[in-house]
Amino acid sequence: MKTPLHIPSPWVVRFAPLVRRDGPVLDLACGNGRHLRHFAGLGHPVVGVDIDVRGLADLEGREGIEIVLADLEGGPWPFGLRRFSAIIVTNYLHRPLLPALIDAVEPGGLLLYETFAEGNERFGRPSSPAYLLKSGELLDAVAGKLQVLAFEQGEVSSPKAAVVQRLAAIDAADPRPLPAG
Image (cartoon, one colour):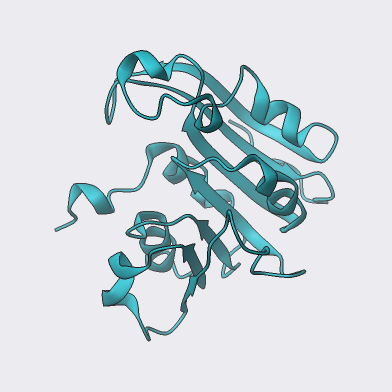
């Protein structure tokens, strides 16, 4: 049985079918690896990166799962020119990484981003502007680089009351037609 810490975001699950079959998936600032686990279960090779990987100890050494210990805010981008079929970011914001994330999406690949936005301070943490997206900030970050499939901004009640932004965007170089719906 999955614990609440391992339940993937419905936003990520919604767009998971668009990820290229067997394409590599990066779970950035992955924590306990709920999205890494989800995509591994779908047959994707997965990479999880975080400053603390203790929550992934049970996955160490499993085929198709790469765990990277890295300080994403204090060190260099740990993936060089490597590209991914999907990059998943939830409940994390470090603005200087946005260009590297966009560049690491392979042609036809997806960026799925979901994190807190301005207004969340009335619900608790995070409340610092450093960790809250400004209105439309994710849209601005991908403008002219990725094609936006879906964007949401506003209050949510689940899994807890918060103000969030959610973005699903595909590399504009994708020659495939986009699915309806």
